[in-house]
Length: 508
Image 1 (tube, rainbow, N blue to C red):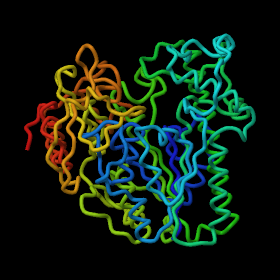
Image 2: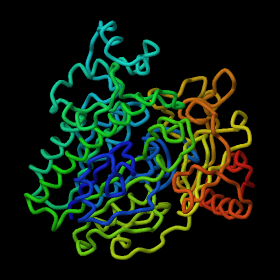
Image 3: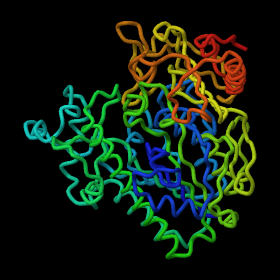
């Protein structure tokens, strides 16, 4: 068996024609869906980027115990488990968070890896005296750096070195993937993890893609929204959305080149292919941009998943309604190679669903550390928040005290205590560290609600009558049932007592 696992970042489900999208040309994603099985009720688990990848690697949600952070010493990781079984694993990625402190342990779990530099504020190109006046003139005020340490300046520098299409990260990432395939397609027993940071912001793509989505906007470059309330003019909103569309179209074309490669070399008969993303993105829907500071509406939480397996080629074009989520990918990747998932994995292998649709869970829990705790049963989505977001108690449980771009500070670690083991820590006690707080004693960073508390109100949505989640409501009977399911899933995942208390639930 050979497997190609393709992971894009911030690929909005509704942008794809195979999921009903109509405004962006995505023929390659559609072509793949015609050959594979498409999952219609696939959800995130932990958010955002690296927490999602920890779910993917371990088969467990982690946002109940930890904010953004590395794989832990006690984590059972799919790529290491495959290597132990004799499978070669290779990572190709331009997702630069892998080489920051908070992601530094993921790539080391593969047999080999290749990084493509230059995305977003990756500290790639050195420019001691950048042309600040030219940058101020060239870029919209919305994406100007707000301080000397704002990574948007580094992003402007990086873009100075992306002049031709082949200089962009997505083409370079796929080129590295093709190099791996050229060398190894004749071998058996390997997994290629091909991961593109696109279509994550900034929405920067070659001109030939952007020209397909014209707008009436006449101002400076505007392709990088901030995670905040949408306050832009209609022309600016259209421009940002058009730049996202162009980037999705580029992702689609390069994914199509992968499909062409598999056609050309006859690889469909013995190669599985999985296509998905870590989360979606709000493009001014619900009056929000981004994915952290707002409730996790379905534009963020309901994500695409399309799976091809040569043994189920007869199921081409079929769709599945089963409720699935990111943690299911870990046991799926293991089973592709006949490896049994270890004890403690909460995800479910999706291979049986390729043969026939069936239920694997009654509900799925998802969210971000310190934000709302959310649940869906496929019919309803329920966002549960503390009554007072500013007064909740939050602790990080870790043996790897690393934030997104830094180590834990010494003043944080001075407050740490040693917590008894959880079942998933394999008998190992862990540090219990109070979450970072600002001068107002509010959780900050990739905790709290990503920096704000707007729209942090417990609400319920009926996806059958209100698929766009525009009409929140409350219903005691429905909420009681979902709260019971939520408490059960939290207990199953060994959520700490304070995770229950903050939501008004009784600890087990």
